Image 1 (tube, rainbow over the protein chains, first blue to last red):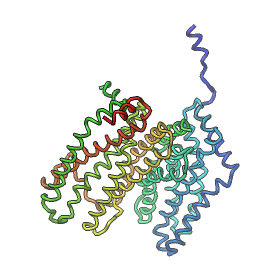
Image 2: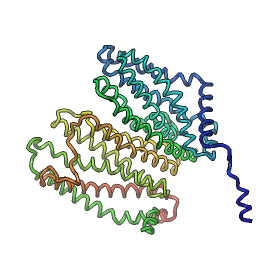
Image 3: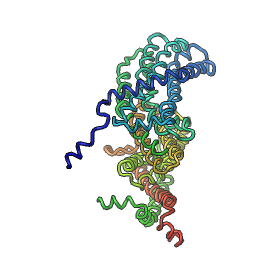
Length: 241
Length: 247
């Protein structure tokens, strides 16, 4: 009797492996995003506008722009990612998709990781692709631009990953946007320091391998830890609503 | 040990214990702090380089100590909140986060006042100052998140997650900020080395640090008791307590 009762309980959704579930979540997020293309463009426009404020607001001198261009681009990219984070879980939260995701038999942190990677591909990666154009506009030389793009390429996924924790924590709260920035900006500081530091070192002709390795370490750390924290935060936020 | 741990989960039990310990914490804290500050401010020898201006160290270092250890203790309590769902742990986090913010601000402020005569400027973007500033931001984020969530239980758990994410980041932030060259003098207390300052300066500093820790303990008890009363206002023991006039 006991063994027969045990056999009745079948593993749910036996066929779907965690990896293909991740693929499905990733694909869905990309498809949904491409149906609202304006949302994809907005962070990029914001990025360009913030960068162009600096020559206007501080100084259009070539020497100033060359010296601080990498920092300006990094700060602008950071703010652009920060602004886009609100969208990461918001729509899915509003229409109930998120609750379905939490109920899936696959581990939630993997699904969150898939969503975060989709977010990076839709905001971080376009920023990296756009960065050389802006780099030329702030008079960075070719080598600096290449290094800058490399640091952005390693750094923006870290921004998305850390940001996903903040987005999950502030889900469904009043004035979530400002709160999200307050929580996340202090955690972004190391990435910013090393991102701009690498470009500065490259401009002085110093070897940058060590800096890039450290940024890679940040990425690995964020990849391994951030999804767990966001998944925990998502469960809390969903139980709250 | 486990029985004690179990008891710690009971707000009522803690309320009684805290009431009993508070006078001792207050008396000890005031005594040590008064002794340390009087000794330090009035009797300790002048610094040969900085003159009397170095005396702000007797406030600066204790508050910087507390600012950091409060965050660490919050992180420990956050683990307890997430793993054992112990009520008192999140009362603790909620009670001491603003205290930590104040001490961080105090250490930054006294540092600025000290920096003016010593370095000739209120503020430098030096490694240790900057990491304290970031610590201030972290405290601000914790308090803001706690205030933003209405439901007590979710607020406690969300704050616990944030505190833990912060505590993983603190060494990284500290390391990356240290990456700049530093203007600040190295740490005052090191367990492994003999103090570089003379005994007459070091001892009063130790007294003020210990005194401030005890005062912090007293303050924590008050704040936790208030929070417990608010949370347990519908329970019988709180009603009886209030009816009896707080006795």
